[in-house]
Length: 401
Ligand code: NAD
Ligand code: MG
Image (cartoon, rainbow, N blue to C red; front, side, top):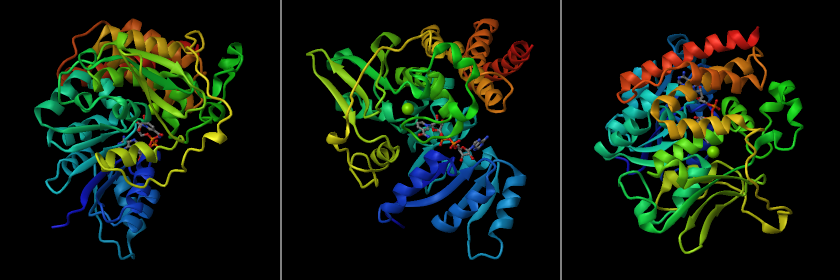
């Protein structure tokens, strides 16, 4: 039996997936890739299989799995190829597996991530949408199955690092105030449109929206960063990860993305986690926790930093952030709805079907149009998600008129 950590990477071909594989490749004595999964990009997956030799590779569809087989035919690659969410879930729960990187984008990540949680794995959570969508249910399952939940989102990973040990992880019901914490300061860069004339936001192009000034990321999260819905989803994510309420969290704009978030204590201390904006830092932190390993990240040189600034977010510029905070206060039905509507609206924007500013209109109108339903069980969550997607499609038709 190998003593290396056996890993499953859900969403291996994406930005987080490939950064994870980079960190693993730098630390071959500690980690081994058991399975890789991806959506449709068979060509990228073939490359990853040849480089990392997973035992299994899973594509979302039969068609993509077939393409992967063709790409690998005639090579020495022995990877077993499968398809579908069920296979992803099965491998995420496989007895040989120690840790699962949850890096599928959007609601599609929920079922395989829950499968890893239910199998009591160490779950490295990048897929914030799954937690936003299912909040209490997700955290209850983490506790019930004694899974270890480690945040990959750079802000949440920073907060985790700045919290006292008793509050790290989601296994306890400890409250922030009981351990001297007064506030979580969630930082965000403000994205590419921090200083753009607000009256021109309706003409933003897809290329402008995905061009984040500091971070290189997948398309959906890049658009979410431009609208600051990303910070809104992270606000909800923080509520669940750190067992707190909306009032405990404050969003701070920090355009340089050097501080990745902070924790303020009752005695006036503020602890910040800093570093160059490179996702390999939180990935390496979570992979090796509680040890530290090489992540390949350029060390921070303070003499290179000319500005270090902080402001409050302007909700007129970022109405999606306000909407998500309101949903967070309202409860699970609202957060599941906003998450689903936003996924549909961002996809429509990326396809050129709606304007950048319509993303907010679709999200807000979907939330307005959806009755406040009870959302507790997985079936209720999935039904709420489906209803919100249908509503969002109708709202898109309206804003197109
Ligand atoms: P990405 O678009 O680069 O990659 C997404 C991955 O998910 C790809 O491997 C894709 O093939 C797979 N995928 C897409 N649809 C799928 C489906 N229906 N079924 C199965 N697999 C599917 O995205 P990313 O930027 O790597 O982000 C992944 C997750 O991590 C998101 O939830 C995002 O919010 C979160 N995150 C990303 C960053 C970042 O820097 N990129 C930072 C923090 C959090
Ligand atoms: Mg983040």
